[in-house]
Amino acid sequence: MKFTKMHGCGNDYIYIDCFRETVKDEKAAAIFLSDRHFGIGGDGLILIKKGTVADFEMVMYNPDGTRAEMCGNAIRCVAKYVYDEKYVNKTEFSIESMGRIKYIELSLENNEVCSVKVDMGAPILNAEEIPVISKNDRVISEDITIGGVDFKMTCVSMGNPHAVMFIDKSPREFELEKFGPLFENNEVFPRRVNAEFAYIQDRKNIEMRVWERGTGETLACGTGTCATVVAAILNGYVDNEVTVHLLGGDLEISWSGNEADSVFMTGPAEIVFSGEIDL
Image (cartoon, rainbow, N blue to C red; front, side, top):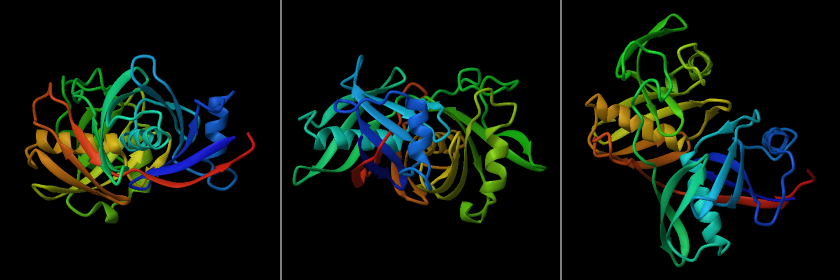
C-alpha cells in the first residue's frame, strides 16, 4: 500500500489516498502504521476520500485506533495533497471530517502550496456541547484542581473538546507529561479532552504546548491552537489576531470575538516522504 508522510508544524500523520488504495480495517491500520518503532510512525492515520457533503473527506484516526473529529494541521496537509495530486485545480474548496465542513484557501508560490488558510468554523462554548461537566453554561476561567494543583480552565470545542489553562511561565518548563493525562482522563470530560497549557507573551503572541486525547503530546495541534486563542480572547488577554508559538512552529489565528463568527487558521503543510508498506 502506498502512503505519504506529511506534517503541519511537526504534527505528523500517515496519509492514505483512498482514491487509489483500499484500507480494509481502518482502526487496525491506524494502530499499526502510527507505531514509531514497528510501523511508519506518526500522530495518527488520515484517509483521504471523496466527500459526500464537501469536495473531499478527511477520515482521522488516533494512534490508539479511536476516531478523531478534526485536526487543523492534518486538514491543511490534506488540502496540499489534493492540490498537488491535481484532484482539484482551484485554490478554494471544502473538506469534511465527521460531517463537519471546513473551507480551504490555498496560497501558492510558483504554483506550489506555501500555506493554507482554513475556516475552522465558530467555536462551541456551551459546556454541554463541548462536553464538560460544570454548574455553569460556559466554562471560562473556572477553577479545577488536578494532581493537587489549582488551575483555571477555559473550555472550547472546535469540533473536538479542549481545556485551555493559562500558566505563568513558559510551557517548556511545565510538567506536561504529568498533568496532560490527568486532564485528558478526568471525570469532568465525558469524552476525554485535549489539554492546552499556554503562556501569554504579549497581546499578539502566545506560547503553547498540547496534550492530545488518544495521542499524547504533539508538536502542534491546529484545533487546540484555535481553542487557545479563543480562550485568550474570552479572558481579555490578547487581540483578535495572534501568533501561537508551538514546539513544531508557528500558526496564525484570527477571531473577531463574536461567538457566531469563524476562527481562521493559517499555517504550513509539508511532505516528508512517500513510500509503500505491506498492510
